Every structure is written in structure tokens, then in C-alpha cells.
Amino acid sequence: VGQGAGSRRMGWARQRCSHNASTSGASAAAAGLPTLGTAAKATHRGGLLARYQRCLETQPLLTKALSCALISAAGAVTADVAANPRSPNIDLRRAARFGLAGAFFTAPTCHVWWGLLGKWFGAGGFRCGLTKVTVDTLLWATPWQFGFIACVYVLEAAPVVGVPALQRLDLATQLESTLHRMPEIMLDYAKVWVPVQLVNFTFVPVPFQVLCVATTSATARPTISPTVSDRRTRGLAAF
Image (cartoon, rainbow, N blue to C red; front, side, top):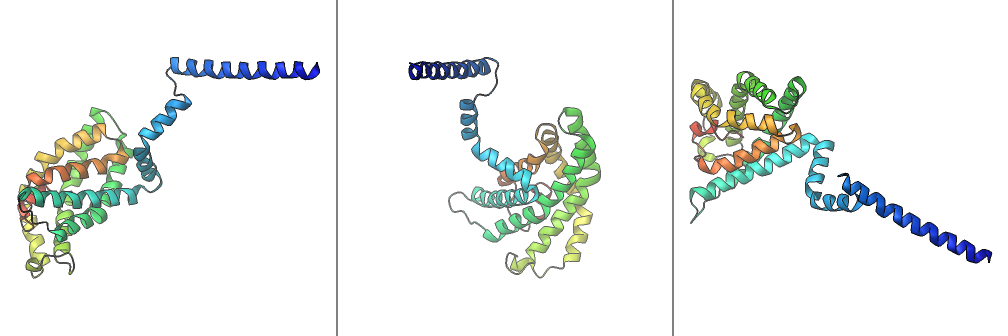
């Protein structure tokens, strides 16, 4: 008799636990809270994005550098293909130069500078975005753009990824010529990147801003002359 009563009590307890679990799950769903099933589905759907976000949290600079390098190199290849779709002449050295510039110049400098802007002015909202764009354009854009062009000149003179026809050019002469053309370059820069940066600073979370701008640049680059020695277009193809 005792064993039968114990079995009935255990069965009643299991039924009650099952009822409570189903009731709590229904209550959570009704309240709009994530249940175990919906969390598992969300994790599956956002697996790649979640892993990338974890990389941004644990290794932010390395993740941005690798992302920027791959996107910049892909943008250079896309520009070559767009220039002659029927018979593309893909310049792998040029793609390598853009990838190296993205990894070792664009990503580190933007990571530090945009991180400072985020600390100074916060994140999100049109007023915040407008303030960041104003400060970025007035204080940062011109020296950054000149530094990027100098980086490209150095890579063009490099022994492996360089351009043989440009390796004989004097770097100081090229930089002096660039200084004289900076007003024209920055005018071209402002036409494209001020609106892009306003959207970037207003809507994009700080960890993803470098990725956003690199992707925008890679997408826009096929509309810009892909000629390696075309100095005038570098104000647009900055990233």
C-alpha cells in the first residue's frame, strides 16, 4: 500500500511540474519574453552575426583589421571586373595594396578615432551623428586622407606588391604634389563621405562603424576609376 501511494504521489508531482512548465512557457510567450525554444531558434538564426560580435568584443582591433583588409581587397577586385566585365584584368597586387592599407592604416586609425568620438559624444541620434561628422570633417578627415594617400604611395613603391612603373618616383615629390591638391581631393571626399558618415555615426553601433564604411567603399569603388596611378580619384576611394 505504501509503495502504491508513493507511486501515485510521484506521478502527481510529475504532472504538476509538467503543467507548471507549460504554464510558465505560455506566460513568457504571452508577455513577449524569450522562451528556451525561441532563444535556441534566435541563436541558430544569428549564429554567424553573434560569433562576429563576440570577436568584436574580445579582439576588436584584430577583427576590424581583418574585416577591412578582406573587404578592401574584394572592392579592388570588383572594380577591376567592373572596368572590363567581358575580359577582366584583375590586378592582384593592387588588391593586396588596398588590403594592406585597410588592415594596417584604415582599421587602426578609425578604430581609435571613432572610439574617442563615441566616448566624447555618445552614440545614436541625429544630433550626436551631426556633431561627430562636424568634428570628424574639421579635425580628422584632411590629415587622415593625406595619411592614406601617403600609405598608398609607400605600398606602390614596395618590392612585392608595388607598381614597377611607379617605384622610381620620388615619395617626397609625390607628397608635395598631393599637398597642393588637397583642397580638390577633400571636396571630392566631402561629396561622398560626409553623407555616408552622417548615416554611419547616427545609426550604426560603434563596433560596426569600420565594417560599415569599408563595405560602402568596396561597393562604391567600381563606380570610381580603378586606374592605379589616377591620383585624383583617391579622395573618393579612400577606404
